[in-house]
Structures are given as structure tokens and as C-alpha cells.
Amino acid sequence: MGKGSINESLLETIPKRLKDEYGPLTLRSIDDPRVVGFNSKVYAILHSKFDHVMFLDADNVPVKDPSYLFKTPEFLQTGTIFWPDFWHPMKTIFNINDESLLWEMLAMPYVDMFEQESGQLVIDKTRNAAALRMLSLFVFHDPNLFSRYKLAHGDKDLFRFAWLKTKTPFHMIANPPGIAGSVRERKFCGMSMVQSDPQGEVLFLHRNAKKLTGGLDPKYEPDTKIWTHLQRFRFT
Image (cartoon, one colour):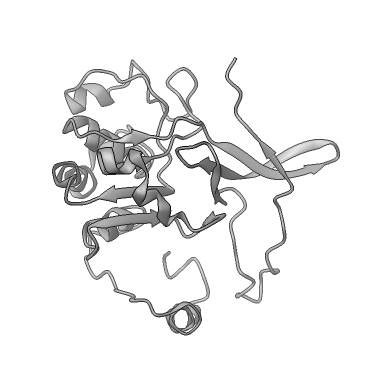
């Protein structure tokens, strides 16, 4: 979150409110000048003091305590759980398909799989150290060729690319994401991505379309309820 995105006075009050209302917790500032925008996520994971890390985007709401993911067979076997995006090489807005220059740059064969949605990540840093080093190279190398040639969108697929490049195993959730939203004038309006746990149960509601405001800034109205219906992916 940059200083220009919210009222600057809130940048001083939010840390205190977080500690007072949700503590005990530790907040650490990022002072590295290379860290701008999406790569703050990668930096935070790399510099976390925890070996087992669960990262959630700020607008990602778990429907229950997700810490049980650390005890699932999928995590215990691979040390990594990733989640799929809506997009697949057969239908993508990000040009990640079998004709993309991406595979030549990575010096690896084309991989036919759903793209990744990185709004939630579960990683054992010790077991995946090689993949994380590759991820750091992808994100912080200057110039960033992924961005320069528009080979990927932000960080969302760089995690799986780093794991694939280093031949590090990971578990990709089998269920494609759903969409939570509401019905207006008999038409469904999706506003949040819905991600499942390894058993197929809804676990995360990622509000990445209609963003949260919290009603903290006077120019915004308090957040309204937007989840009344769930649209699921159906294989045909």
C-alpha cells in the first residue's frame, strides 16, 4: 500500500490500531528501496522469521481459521500449497500459453496447467529454499524481464515458475476458483474470488474486484455486504 493510496494520516494510526485491537503481533517496516508494489509480498515471505509461512493478501478473508493447512497431507508431503487462477493456457488474458516467449526465457518446456492466484500461499521455507532463491532472482533482478516483456502479471505466477524451474514439488489445489457476489436484476455480479482447501471446502474469499475500504477515510462509505451467491466452476 503506497502513501498515495489512502489518507496519509492513516499510515500513522493503522499500526497502532492493529496492535491494540488484534495484538499481540509484530509489525516490521520494509526499508529496502527495491521493494515497490507487488514484490513486497515476496520480500515479506523471504524475510519472515517463521519457517512455515501462510501469506494472505490484505483483501483475502478466510471463512475459518486456516492454520489447519499446515497439518494437511498435501503440505506435509511437499511443503507448499498453491492455488489456481481462473485462467488456463487455452483461455488467458495474460498470454501464458504454449507460444509465449516466457518458456524460452526460463529455458524450460511449456507446462499445461491453470495459472496461479497468489492471494494465498502456504510455504515451508526450509524445504523450499532453492525455489525461494530462484523467486528472489525473478523478482529483484534488474532489469525485470517479466515486467519489461509483459511475460507475467505481477507476482501471481512467479511462485510456480520458481518451483517448476528448480524442480521443487508443490501441491496445486485441484478445485478451480469460484466467484462470490450477488444477484442484481436477475444477473449474477461476481465480486470476490473463492478458493477451496484440499478437500474442496470453501476457505478463502479474496475480495480482489470490489476492494475493501473499511470506511476509515471520510470519502468512502462503510463496506457493504456483497456476498449472497456463489458461482462454481463446472467441468464439461
